[in-house]
Image (cartoon, rainbow, N blue to C red; front, side):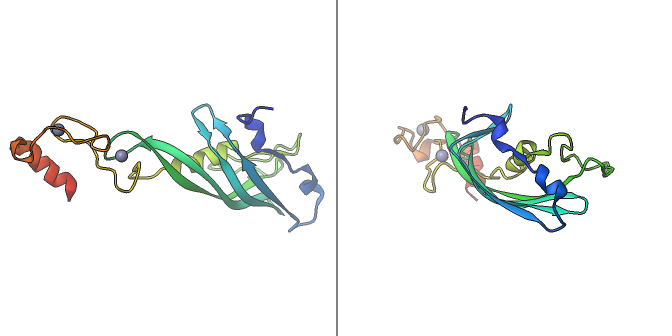
Length: 173
Ligand SMILES: [Zn+2]
Ligand SMILES: [Zn+2]
């Protein structure tokens, strides 16, 4: 089975349908890589969560860990940032009429819950606002665009266009 298989996040909780209220099951994930949607693969995906039988359905809570890649805000190279995915969601039983804004439901026929859409949504919300490739990233030369992590360029600070200098001053604030 491919490690990118989305079904890695499908769990059979049919037994919880029969269980008494408050019954819970703890699960631990330790995947090298999981595709959670056509537009997102999480590498790795680890952590723990608990599925608890409550009157309306199955409540899933826990904390998963992964990384996301986004362009570094200073040099635009790929920056890998750790993210924490906080699970805190109720999967409604099929016989419960879904509140309009709720999109997560328990599949009554198969007894399955698919966590992939939920994990995907939370992962996107967890993207860093200011991704940075490394704490001491030197960024790009504002004049010639040279990646200053790779090496200094030949631009002299004194020669910088005053408009660019003003812009750089703003960016450095
Ligand atoms: Zn950078
Ligand atoms: Zn330069």
